[in-house]
Amino acid sequence: MGVNLRDIANPKKIDLEELRGKRIAIDAFNTLYQFLSIIRGENGDLLKDSKGGVTSHLSGLFYRNVNLIETGINLLYVFDGEPPKLKNAEIQRRKEIKEVAAQKYEQAVERRDFALAKRYASATARLDDQMIEDAKKLLDLMGIAWIQAPSEGEATAAHLTTTGVVDYAGSQDYDSLLFGAAKLVRNITISGKRKLPGRNVRIDVVPETIVLSEMLATNQITREQLIEVGMILGTDFNYADFKGIGPVTALKLVKKYRKVEDIPELKGRINFDPEEIREIFLNPKVADVDPGTVKNKPPEEGKIFGFLVTEHDFSEERIKTSLARIAEKIKQEGQSLEQWFG
Image (tube, rainbow, N blue to C red; front, top):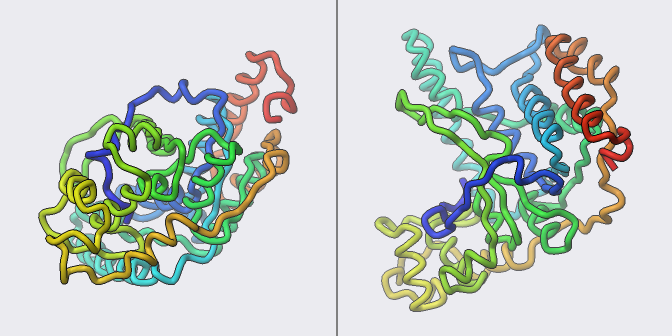
């Protein structure tokens, strides 16, 4: 779901080139779900190989990473581990939404209303074990480092920004800020033209950054108070149904009363334990990483061809062209593959 902090986050739009030379810890599950939602056929169905295996996520992962590597960005993907128990309710809620969307998708296909079908299809995205395994394999072949988080990937990515392993956490969700990400970058895996849901309008989606210290200073709050704001709006660990309270109003209430349970307007309406939520964000389970163990490597071109072209029916020409772009970029920089990726 992700907590909606946009109205108080003051994100700064940037060019992708401004991230050149930076290391970014990307929330892998968040990114793969984006690809599964966006990369689909005209009827809304997922891209698949001749054996019926889903390839939408692999397509997004490969071609977008080529763009990012070509720009000179150093990537580290962080995969989710076991979610906190408090997330079970949110997981179940998402499952029910997907089931309803799947039914509406089938009905739209039967009516041959493919525009509506594609809209519902994007809400049915599911990530299974095989997709995760394939994504990790592709990253290995591309020479892109990844790590396994013990729990929430966003929490570990945020931790890596505070320990100096990376410069930014990369995610669409503002929850990374609640976990303490020193710097957050959004839209690096989905930038470009995007169609607004339910409208025949396309907008430019560009990368944007948020510096936590600047956000807190601008709003004159602490990170602890930001977590209180998140709880009022609703996080992955608590469902908040405080109608009429958006980010700006929530901020005002927290600045006045400091804690959720002390806000008069919310008395008798809090259906969660605030202390449990605070503990998740302030003391999450994270992976400690030695920077020397997560260096990227040159791509294994032959194995990439075998995996994407032979096994999953990707276009050999497109794969060759994409890898040639990386080689040309390295050549322009006058570096060896080892220097570039090391």
